[in-house]
Image 1 (cartoon, rainbow, N blue to C red):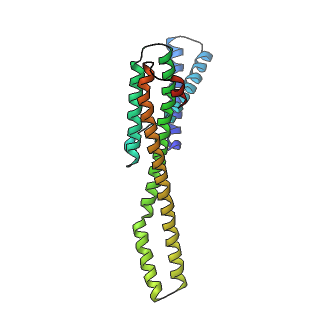
Image 2 (image 1 turned 90 degrees about the vertical axis):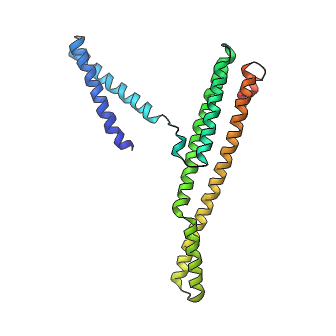
Image 3 (image 1 turned 60 degrees about the horizontal axis):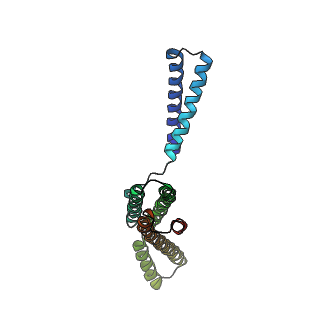
Length: 211
């Protein structure tokens, strides 16, 4: 995908750079060397901003399946509640400090999104392997081996069993990833709840920031 975007970004940079040069020459009446510098500057500015926009993480809960979607949505809700809590606090050093904490928790939301996508990819791999079909093949091969043993059937059965083992490892990894996100969600909800105390000065800001 990045290879498709690069030519588009290059064309966009050339177009913007050329526009800068035309404006400098025709409207501002500057010498052509200055217009050339303006074109080069416009090109690199467009490239920089284009890369910044393209590299920004876009969190879309509907891009992943369940249960990962609910984890991402839960983290987003926690983030919205936290932002609202901090926004309602009185202006001053406490609010500024809490805003810094909010930025760190926003990083936690981005991490939740990364982990959820990994979990979704693991589940997708399991679906492609199709454990139900593999177990059916295993049963069929075992039945045939019982009546007509052969090296080829032995090798086929070993291959199917290896694939089943892979699906089991992937399912275990998926479950571990889900448990991790459940814990993360619980802690996020706890921190959001405690933020209301801190915002009115009824909580320990140092302890909250550390947690």
